[in-house]
Length: 473
Image (cartoon, helix red, strand yellow):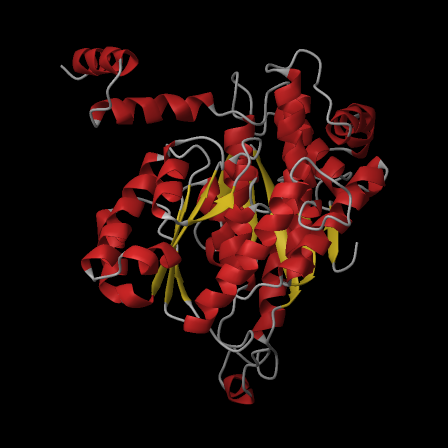
C-alpha cells in the first residue's frame, strides 16, 4: 500500500534461514480461514467466551470508521462521532493556552497515545514546535510523579485520566495526586472542571460517577474496547490531537490498511503473512522470542505497543511467543551477539524508515583522518539504513529468521496503516492459537492481590489477605 511495504525475503529461502517457502505456503489456507472469521466477526470453534461479547470485541477493528457518520456504520459510530467534536474542541482549547497536558493511563491506556505523540507530535523540525508539554508517566513511580509536579504550573495544566473500568488503581491513584495538586494551587470549581478530562466507560464504573458529579469532560471508551486495542479510540486520539497530530490522515491510513488486509490474497496480505510467520516460527520451529527492532527512535515505541498486544492477547494456556523490545542501531551493540551466536530461538521483526525527516551529513573533514576516508560527504541516514540491512543479512547467514516493515516516512498515514496491520495480525493469531485475544486473566489476578494488600473491602479480598499472610510467613 502507499508508503508502506512488508517483506520477508530474509525469513524463508534455501540457505541458513529456518523457515522454508513450502511451509509458509502450506499454512495459507489455515491463516486465511482464521482471517475470514475475524473479518466476519465470527467466533472460532472451541474458543472461550460468549459469542455476542466476542463479536463486540472484534468490532474494535471498525474504530477507524466510527468518527464520520457518513462512512461505514459501526457499533461505535453514534458515540464516537460526537466524541470527535468534543476532542477537537478540547484539544484546540489546550493548544491555545499552551502549558502542560498530563495523560494518566497505564499499559494499553498509555502506550498507544505515547507512541503517536513520539512518532507524530510536534517537535523541533516537525511543525512549529511543541505548543504543549505532554507528560505521560505510565507508572506510579513516586520519583517520576514528583519530577512532573516540580516542572509544571498548576494554573496552566490540563489532566486526562484514562481507565475503561474506572478501577485501574494506578491511573486513579495518579489522578488523585494531580487533582489535589491543581486544587492546592487554587484551581477549583468551574476552572478545575475545565482542566480535567475523564476517558472511561460512559455508562459504568466509579470514575464516571466522579466525572458526572464534578462536571469533568467525559471522553467515551466503550465497554467492548480493551485498552491495548484502543489506540484509535479517544484513549489514543485525544492526546495525539493535543500534540498536533493529523488524526484524519491517521484514520485514513488505518482504513486503507483495513481494506487491503480484508481483500488481499495471502501472498500479498501483510497481516496474514506476519501472522503465518509468527505462528509457523513458534509452533513448528520452537521459536520462543519475538524481537521487535525499529531502526528509528521516532517509532521506537511501536516495540512497546506491539509487545503488550502480543503478550497480553496471546500468552494463555501455555501458548504464545515472548516479545523482546530493542532499537536499532543501539541494540546491535547489546543484543545482536546473542541473536547471532546464541540459541536459534528468536524471530526478528524489523521496522525500517526510508526518509527520516531531515538529512544529517558527515563533513568532508572526517575523510581526512585515517580509517574514516569512506565517511565524508555521506549521511548518517544512509549509515543507519546500511546498519539495518547489514544486521538482516548477518542474521540470515546465522540462521535467524526475520521480516521487515518499510515505511517511506513516519507520517500519520503510514503509522495508522502499520498499527492496523499489527492489530489484525494479533487477532488472527488468537484464532490460530485458539485463545481469546481480548481477555487478560493473568493480569487481573495480580491486580486483585494488590487491591487486597491496600485494604479494599469485600469477602473475596479477605480471602486473598489470608492467603497472602500464609504465603509471606
